[in-house]
Length: 184
Ligand SMILES: Cc1cc2nc3c(=O)[nH]c(=O)nc-3n(C[C@H](O)[C@H](O)[C@H](O)COP(=O)(O)O)c2cc1C
Image 1 (cartoon, protein in one colour):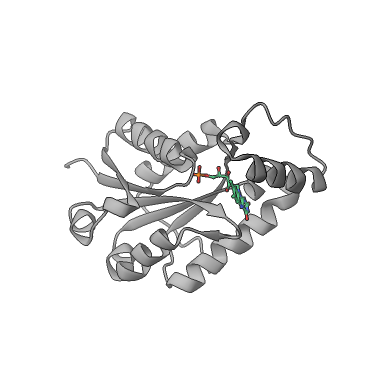
Image 2 (cartoon, helix red, strand yellow; image 1 turned 30 degrees about the vertical axis):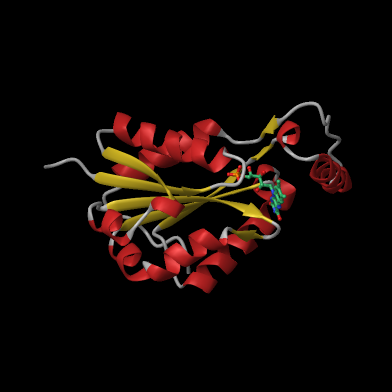
């Protein structure tokens, strides 16, 4: 049997989703699949035609996923629905059990807005890259997390991604023969 051809598409603001997409592809290759990674801004319908499985990785900013990924999914909903597919939603809310329900609500809104029902989805904690933000954003993000009881040092970055969970998800996705519908 020929190797599964996986396409990993990402949409990112500060790079974390791109790193996660790379990790998914690396793990897929280690599990025997062929895998390519594309920024959603360069991804096309033809790319989707050439693969038989797709993972889309997108981050949450101000309560929603990027419009670029929403447009891509809406435009290609038919093809996405006909191949093995997964969505990885990257957010600050997914980093803590107390705020996980917020992350779940945002991803469900995304599915209902786009009409896409991937076989599987995963909520993944993102990174807070305080040293990359401008002073106003740094102040605002620090304040948002302080309200949740988390004190942040603005001179450093925080990586909340559970990289082992990302690897496990990628391996299970590539190896699963009977994908299930995760979204009701
Ligand atoms: C300006 C800004 C707004 C954000 N808004 C949200 C939000 O509404 N909900 C949330 O859970 N996380 C939020 N986050 C956290 C991001 O989802 C997290 O930093 C993620 O790792 C970003 O991934 P990216 O680098 O791939 O864009 C926000 C982060 C920034 C910088």
